[in-house]
Amino acid sequence: MIVGIGIDLVEVSRIDKALSRWGDKFESRIFTEREMNYCNSKKDRSQRLACRFAAKEALLKALGIGWRYGTNWKEIEVINNELGKPSILLSGKTEEFSKQLNVKDILLSITSTENYGAAQVILVSKK
Image (cartoon, rainbow, N blue to C red; front, side, top):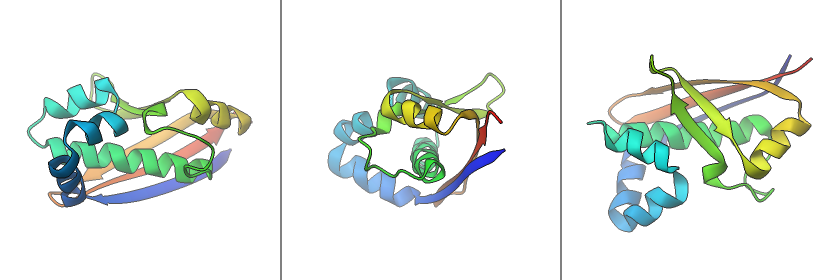
């Protein structure tokens, strides 16, 4: 049973501006070490960071909590399997909240263009 759907769109230029202004401070506040390593190894780094940013926002929208429950950016980690399929790993308060909703599976789709990164999240319950 679907218990939540979230979608988000991020301008790549917004990520570029944040990186220019705040540099590593921005990146290390928002993204996990694994996310940074993955994105920094790609030529389209900003697009990939924008997609991960959008995925984190979409997940919080799907949970219906936003940032008001003391969640942290790094509690939501976007990883890719060996074929490139993205998925989300949760930890901390964000994971606890997903358990309260009986979330069994988190479905993630991300896409990008030169100017935008987008993500959609669907939460499936254990029922």
